[in-house]
Image 1 (tube, rainbow, N blue to C red):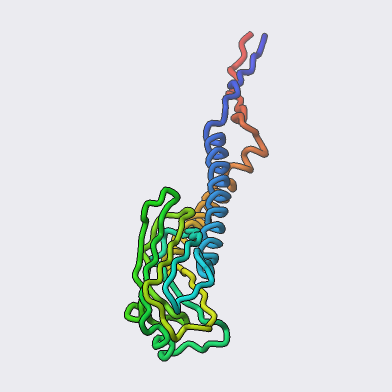
Image 2: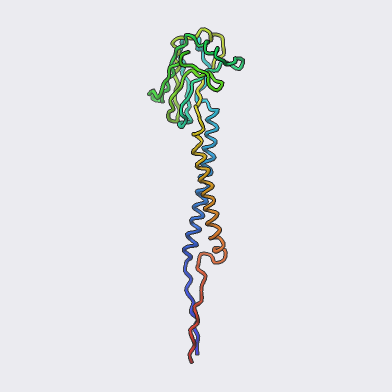
Length: 224
């Protein structure tokens, strides 16, 4: 009389393996999305205070200046060419009268001398916005290092002897931060999927590993 217990051979746990792969992929995606969200959010807050161009200038008489223009944002809805008259000057509507007779142009060119964008500035184009004296608006263009050529064709005599700093600012409305918000939301979703998958997969891996738990078949009846 002999008995021979039959056992199923251990097979790979396909579902458990797929679940682990999904959890790992979700974790990696969450890390990447989180880093992108932080980077884009940091970029947005830097653009708020960034000045791609800034130079001391004399707009009281004709002349030409060539200065670097480092463009770091291409998603703003515009850029402003602004004039600062120093910390001791209080901006008001009367400040616009200091620009009487002013006329000039700003030309942005690439390293090959090809014009990218330009703007004309004068008293007629100037206005006050958010505590700044804006001389002209610029169209947004691609990121990179450029050259700004400032030509004063007719100076504003009332500016003689005053501190004058010409600079550019990005016009931001908050929508430029939307990619960071979306990436942050996707990070949360990805982390939730990763955690949910791990809750189902990890216990099985801990108990059985990557193999199916062997199940014994019924032992057949013995015969003499």
